[in-house]
Image (cartoon, rainbow, N blue to C red; front, side):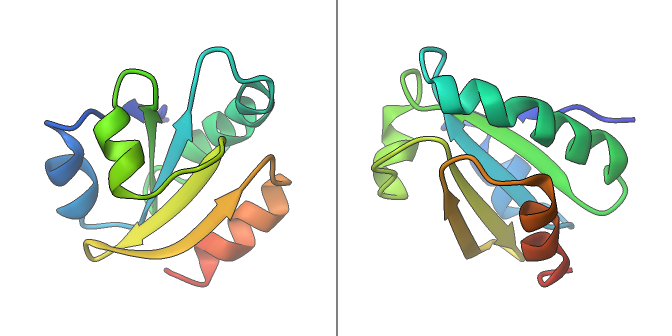
Length: 107
């Protein structure tokens, strides 16, 4: 059983870019209602699929540089990375099934 990990500018490369499995990166903020709505879904995915995928969270208020680097304009934004490359992007609250379908296509 696994939980989402918090990622910062200093850990992004080791946790996301160099990961040996696909990574879903959730760009979020404490004050964001939709972010709070999608958080339990991402917790479930992290727990249920920890052997196949990693779930990471980036607080855009604390890590403005990462938000800017990936041109995150609205939150929540989910980016999927595989083999160090961003391969997919979703914005807004997404149903669990949609997130899983997008993830499956990159496994």
